[in-house]
Image 1: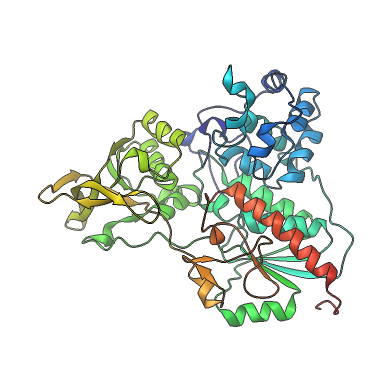
Image 2 (image 1 turned 120 degrees about the horizontal axis):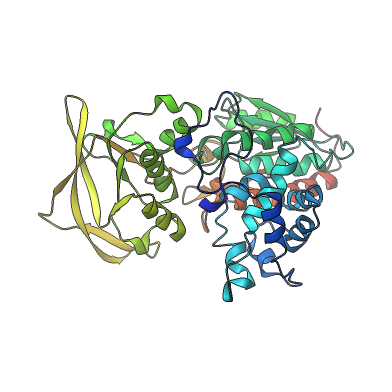
Length: 454
């Protein structure tokens, strides 16, 4: 998810989303002086490994050099040319695993704070409403993009810059997808993602909220009206656990969304249990902890098998969040409708499963109870079930695409978490999917001889 050193609310909070001091970030934004000092530490490597480590291949030495020469607008342009969601990615990218992890200065001292510098430059232009790009000359071609998450915004921006007429369909009230609804305020305020939606609109993209694609007939209708369709469907809901007392579980994704959109609706709790050990689970645990609860995370494997990044795990520990490993919840205990605890069983690890991780199995007679007054489940997300409804080929529940992000249906492309059968799902990978798809769609539309739709 994110480097917690990158995040705060430097941009003015929207009136609809008041700032809660309990979610104050760990570090403030860089001042002009701090940014200049940090930028001048960069060696400006000719064959910079940080560029290769970035999935969107931002020219990192160049944008940092422009910061050092006080050319923030030029720096932001370099970033946004490669990654239209540079503001979001500066906050949520796992930079320790990517650009900063590849920095040559790791061998002798701390790496360049690439994420924070990127944010410094992009916030300079986005906070002032400056637009770096304009739409290309009109081609007469029309593309529908379904889903306004990172993949959808990325492909929309790139296609608009190429001159295609883009209509972006979003089923929710607000655009931005995961960035708006699913990333904890501590990491990314709602305003940051909404500014990126507005930047897409400024390129001439038509954004229609409250528009949901639900079946193959709907897709056929889009294909009859548009020259190509891109699907950025994301993933589904948190799956059911199938344990007694399930109705008392709080959905982790909904909990995070409520913390951003309607924080007053969050339940008050003094002792919270979070089931899961991925990045979303840590986000949910962080919210509960910063709201004053004692928080314990339960995971059926060990810390070696956690899907969360190591720096996320260490951050959770620094927040005072507790872990109980090799622990499987089997029942939510309640009294008069109020949660009082979770019955668990101890686990032991066995042979590796198909994913290569050791399979946990219960230890007979090891049942015990963890007292609590709220339980949040954050055990991953269901695959995009809509894919099969649309008649697309799927593998492991994910949409099958080729290297051009094209699906099994002609003129239909897809990207983002809904295609991530292998590899790590992340915002920056979704942005790159959108870039790949835009190139392929543009090539297809440029080669098509028939008259454009409309």
